[in-house]
Image (cartoon, rainbow, N blue to C red; front, side, top):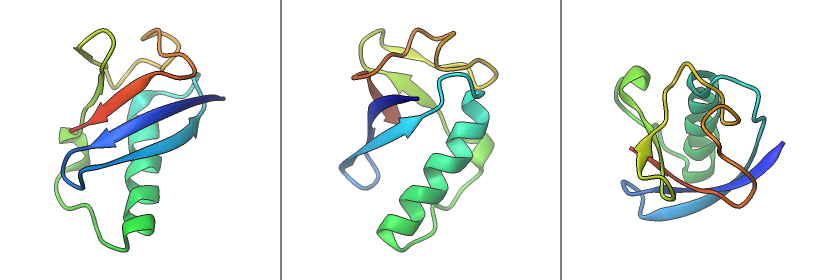
Length: 82
C-alpha cells in the first residue's frame, strides 16, 4: 500500500488515498470514484472508462492496464484525476 494525493479539478479538492500499488489502475479508478462519490455525497457522472489518472511529477497519463508500481508511482506522489 502506498499513500498518494489525488487532485480532482471538478471538485477543486485534493484527497489522500492508500492504494495497492499492485492493482491495475482501471480497478483503482473504480474504487477512487466510489470513495469520492461517497465523501462528497454525489454521483460522479460520465463514463468510467474515460477517466484518467495523471502524474504531476512525470506529467504523463497513467496507462489503465498497468499498476501504480509499473508507472513508478510511490508514496507521496501527486496524481490528477481527470
